[in-house]
Image (cartoon, rainbow, N blue to C red; front, side, top):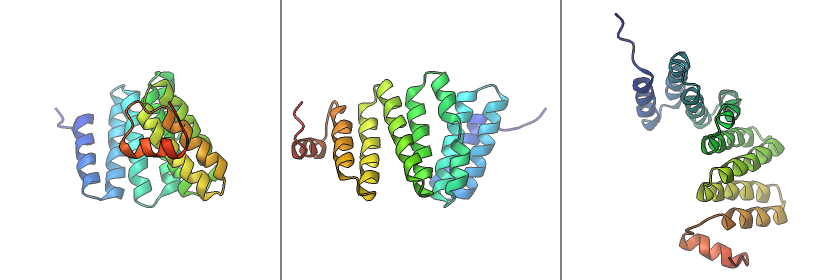
Length: 175
């Protein structure tokens, strides 16, 4: 009889390592969790662990490895109609593209993330993604695209914060 840790135990260990700021070790442990979930027949949790691994790799300064880790996970979530996690996977993908200075790929991934989060009825998360996209447009000197994206993201927020209400007023959004 073996005393191998369960996938959830490996995940908890990875989260603790991540919280301690050891991103390379966290990435390795999330990879182990992904393998454990895949072996136990849980592809959605395996994909989620790959996304966690991607975040750890990005924070550890390895954007290409982060992109490789998250590759294809959005398709797994889409097939399961888990649009919330699909949106998060696409956001991780966009962040990696942005770190790699692949601007058009980052923009495309952020847009697709927004679409997935809209399907998931996650207006607040979608607004956050569109704020990231708006900032990317701004850094690329696409001012009109930046404003339109910000407006679009704020339009889906059901309970706006004071800051979001102010931004809506500044952008002349009247809902």
